[in-house]
Image 1 (cartoon, rainbow, N blue to C red):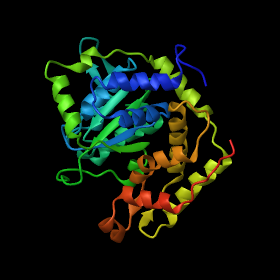
Image 2 (image 1 turned 180 degrees about the horizontal axis):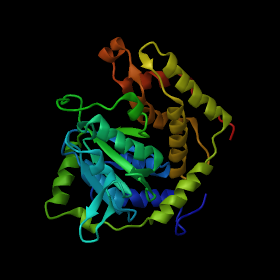
Image 3 (image 1 turned 180 degrees about the vertical axis):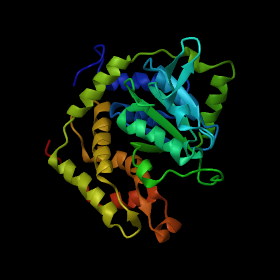
Length: 320
């Protein structure tokens, strides 16, 4: 596994967490999950109540790698062209000119994605999958690296929202619930932000080219047949569980494998262990499940994933 600027990847991740901790308090695991997603060209769905730092998290994450950042606040009146861009008539030049939308960036924060209409949601999710956008017949490639961080309202305030259907939820690599900070963390937040904006003190240490190089390196992390079988047993269990109506798709299987590769990579290993799979499974699989009516009344998706993991025997030793 190559180094970046002569520094091992494990050290680079520690630097990333230290830099992010100037702005985001107590979220080291979230930062690591974001980086794993970035390495796998994946997109992240953040669920949290307003005011928990989702926008600041996205902005500071973009700043650590010298990447462009844009934000879209979704509401029911946002149109697909507000996301992708338009062709407009320039009266001075007497011709039509292309004006790309905010989608042409590296890190895009799609705030409250479930407040947009299904038509607008689909315009964003198509770009996420294809890494390109078509505006009035003209196709533009999205510059790499490209990552969407989408936020969604908590379940207790669903008025005026358009929930993402299962096929669109499946496009997100992982889902993260930020939650509230602890009392100690919130006190540290108060102290850090009392005198100014800590994000101004952040420095970039990843170039976009280095990120894309790391995206190629993570693909080389070895996955043994034992670990592959473990992943497949977990997936099969979700398709045969009595409380799951719709199990994990093949896209979810690949996402779990790649997430485990990312987890191994950021920990400085060139091979995946069953523990990497078990660690990443709740983030990769929970939002991809549809529970039965009876199951949804008793348990959350994450609880069912935990139950699935408990039922599948973890391989004691993997042949690497």
